[in-house]
Length: 176
Image 1 (cartoon, rainbow, N blue to C red):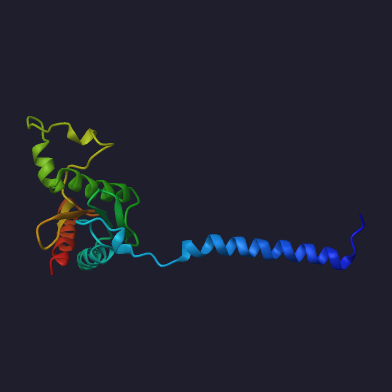
Image 2 (image 1 turned 90 degrees about the horizontal axis):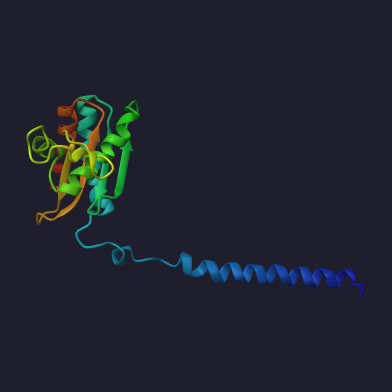
């Protein structure tokens, strides 16, 4: 069967229209507005809270003059926010994330866990569990105004004391 040019064009146009209709049918539900509050677990840090923590930590890090990697995890220990200041050590990226996760997994600062995991203490060796923990200062819990743990912050890039100071500044910013 021989097709005339106008028939070829008609078939081609039908295919284009059907393809567009299919794309629209699939895309509309995906683009519909999603109520994020329905997806947020109660007792989990919100993005607004994480940004508040990050702003406080960054301000203190800049004041100290030490470039830092700052990680914030949610109540489940999952990364919620991360910031790497210009010049911060690449190796400290992982350390900051593990400090935050360690604090959240054990509901205590990494400094407290470190004290309990020294030779002769009952938690000696714990740092090799959970795919590696960090047991020195710089990881702090984040609690809401009711004292509920909603996440944790981990900071790395300076001395242990500098990291701890920045993490605590983030905690303080949350509670202002």
